[in-house]
Image 1 (cartoon, each protein chain N blue to C red):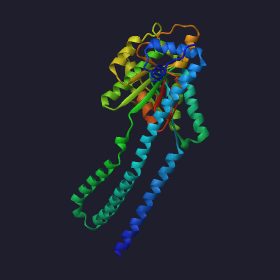
Image 2 (image 1 turned 135 degrees about the horizontal axis):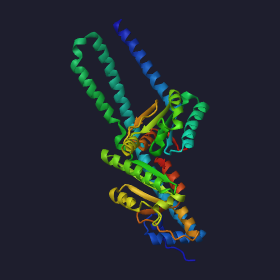
Image 3 (image 1 turned 120 degrees about the horizontal axis):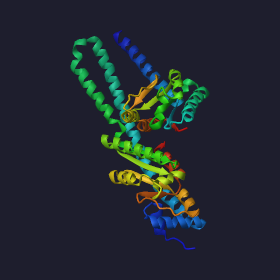
Amino acid sequence: MKLKKYKNMLGQLLALSILMTGSSAFAAEDVRKLVIQVSTDDVRTQNIAMNNAVNLQKALGQDNIIIEIVAYGPGLTMMTPKSPASKRIPSLAMQDIIFSACGNTKAKMEKKSGKKITLVEGVQMVPAGVLRIMELQEQGYSYIRP
Amino acid sequence: MKSIPNQQLDAFVDGQLDQNDRIEILDAMGGSGEIRNQVAETRRLKDLVRLAYQDQRAQSKRSSQPQTKYTSHAVAAVLGALSMLFLIQLINSPAEFGPTLKNMEMAGMEGDTEFTPAQLRMPEQVLFHLSSGDQQVGRELLDQVELVASEYEKTGRDLRIIVVTNNEGLRLYQAGYSDHADRIHELYARYDNIVFAACGTTLGKRIMAGEKVELLPEVIVVDSGVAEITRRQQQGWKYIRI
């Protein structure tokens, strides 16, 4: 009687594990990944980067693509409140577009100007932008530099 | 029109010629389709040889893989079965599981290390690409190259870097134009895993236009910047355009 109960449990667990591995393999195959590099302080290019992201999300469906925009060097201005491009970031971040700011650049800019730099809401910090881009490519992200 | 000895061609394709000889060949390449074909043929042969070796390595990797996979599955299955039994035991006699849990954890860890592909990992490889003649952008490029090189050195990970310049980007490598000749020399002396490569097509164009091009001594010439970039990306190199 007891043994039968365990057998049942075993069966359920096995079924569950098969289900889980199956669905994760499916997800990995289906979702595309893209990293967009912004390394210029040209506002037009910064806007194009965000347009690319939005258009791709529209074309493929928000759940079918993971997009991360990485800004470093002069491109970091995009993620500071001063830049007109930064106004779109909080709402785009709510739409699952990931914004990563280069910590190395931020530290350098702060040292140079002597002032603390704040980033707009929805932006995450990474230690170094270029290293982040390399890491994402390692994980199979496609790379675009508008 | 003089022909070029095979030895010279080999050295040229491998990027081992000194600057004057290199430019002489580029000059000759610019003027003669026959020599361009000769160079292309040499390069093709070398690529074939290299790919053949890669194929062999990949095959030996593949043939050894199923076995490890099989063992790892077996290990996982055994561990799974054991943990089921363990769960059953746990329900029956909660007081006794202390030491067993510890052993199980250790066994699990051993199983994990067995199929970590750390030994199979290639060194990290990254290609930087510059096509702008703006010396400020050139400086940013060298900053990024140095940042990545030093970061990997700190953490002791293997890394290979190639810095490819083409079009106006070639100016960074040209004596008399580059603001950063000293910096390139420093980086070259400091790190042995950085290669500075100039686009041969761009170089050829300049020479054809009658310009006297003098490249920095640290720079090698590749056939074409764009071809180099696509080749390396196909081989799994990361790509960053500055």
